Image (cartoon, rainbow, N blue to C red):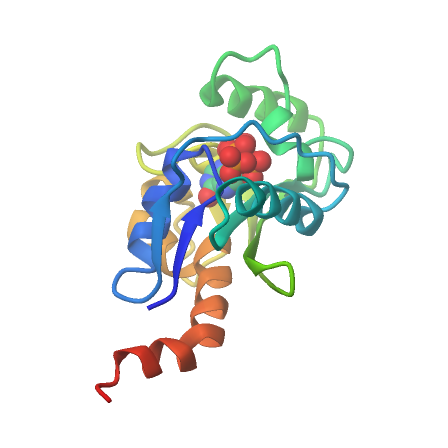
Length: 200
Ligand code: ITT
């Protein structure tokens, strides 16, 4: 089975990957969390920078996730800067409230979460997978699950009930940006996983 260390200091991502890759890919915690400066202009560049830093330090295959929230009406905020949005806010609940406030005068509340995964097996073998989930920013915080901007993100679903990602943990596990990127990765690695599962 393919094994990777997780090039991330975000415990919520680690928990989601445990669910997403259960029984398929093995993702171990890294021996230590590295402070990696995310200097890239795109999610792909930042995922690469993080995965490479962990591979170079620990010498084993690494998986990095760069993700964020893109809000169409606020193109210069969030995006690759999502973790650094509103630094004056002490926690994500406050960041969410700040975002709601900034969107008050805007008509367009739509946006999407994006996740880019970088699997850095060696300098010669590096793979990227992307997933997105579209939706809109709600008018208040809802739900106790998930993390980050989940309480204000209302995903587009067939059921138009206005629930946030923080109220939909099972749905998130199947249809989120991270779930879609992970499924694409699993599909790609499937052949080698199937082979290692077969008895000689
Ligand atoms: P690592 O770089 O160590 O993995 P990080 O939290 O800094 O951890 P990013 O640089 O990828 O991760 O920043 C992602 C930001 O987008 C961060 O502020 C998250 O809260 C937010 N985000 C990403 N995925 C999310 C999700 O599934 N639900 C809610 N917010 C999310």
